[in-house]
Image (cartoon, rainbow, N blue to C red; front, side, top):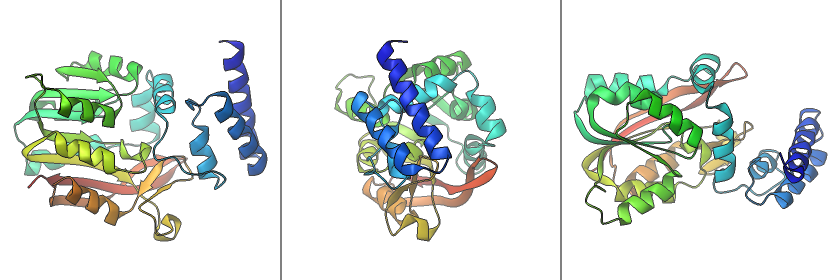
Length: 276
């Protein structure tokens, strides 16, 4: 670790300590210093500032932060997610599709594929599966599962934009587009849903999960940063995004517990819609 990296880490850890001690102003000063030291924001200081109400909310979590976060946790990710956090969205998706729309799907796109939990659960329903994730270490773990035909290290919106613009014959649209645990790292969803629209085959099915907050905590906004430094979305905003992308036939809009956070349930939605 270089001297600059060590200084950044020390500053961030000191900010965290102030935050945990209930001294948000001191923490905010140090988070701001982190941002000046590292504009790419691999620490996620901008999200921390916004969650404290002491900084403008970014439109999404910084790419460098998301990549670093998931690179660090790739080795124990499955145990943390399905054990400690009791995350079961891929299993819920597979259960619904198996009972109501088992396919087969010719081409599946799994955005934010992580270690391949969704790919593993949906493998038997798909002829061809593509996984995309910002974290190279996560992609390596997904590759070990051997449930994808193609894997790409890329940010979701970038990938969608690049794929739709390419004239390569293998760059075909998808008839099953999956984004589980992606929206909690993106605030403004317009670019994401425009990209989904551009890469969806006729009658394609879209599957995604989202976190939300109680009405008073959303403050009337389409999206809001949560106390846990993720992004929550309102039901009306998610419905509008489905309409925007042409996924007008909503088959399922279910209230779920997305995960646990320090033992407390995090409310959210599981949405399955079809392109019309």
